[in-house]
Image (cartoon, rainbow, N blue to C red; front, side, top):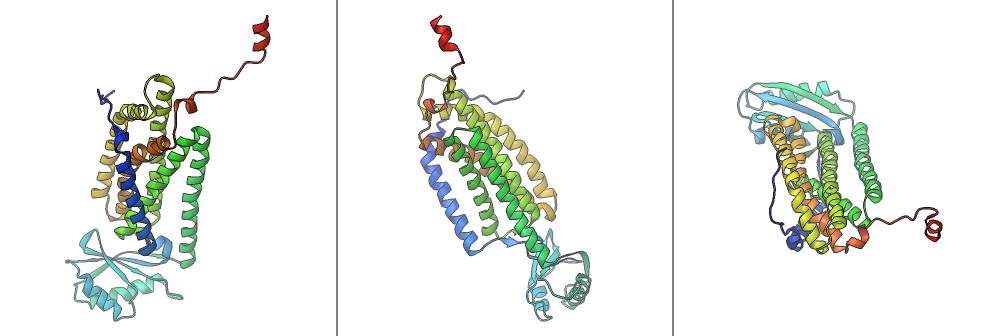
Length: 314
């Protein structure tokens, strides 16, 4: 099997202070953006009507917004979708009006915008109650996943590693949400699914690293905690690189060739792979080291067999 061998130990932990400052700045930026800009929730969560329109030539978004505003569609969100001739129009829910009637009216309005003939490619409608329910269920799904993972790592690892693993997951989720907030990328159900996948990917990578660190703490007789963690990270680096690169190649294909519908999904996963790999090294491992993990903490407890004392007397 192909593998990359590193002859010398890479001093990962010597850069841990710089990495933690960098992570802290990114987290603060993400939280501020989430508080100020919030997330650009898609139709799945907000409800309303989504209309995809195709033009024969490049569309002028400013002219389309102007003509929609003058025809009682001042709440319309207009953006390009895939190409300059494809336009996506999102409208807030309107009580007592069918999506078909709205799309036909919008088409008539666009025909008078001087952008050439417009064709309706897709119309989607989500009621406000459905959107609210999806928002609640999506949040519960993410919260449930994090709680289940918290319970798992609490039993699986020594508490310092468990705390580091959970911190790495929170780090990855916050940064991914922050990316979508800063760039104002639409957040829909596909992106939520991608974030749940990022949680699984990051946890898997963190568990591999933590298992190797725990194994080396028990196996290596010489070396302090920082040295042993550096050795462990170096040993798992080849596996991490191969896994990450092969995953990124697939995601790049989805990002560039998958179309606009899964663009947000691919973006979340691409970013999640990077931050998940980074957090396994510089968040989970750094927190365990900072909390003072040592060999004594990871030596398995010897359980005395029943009757052993009587055998010793005999």
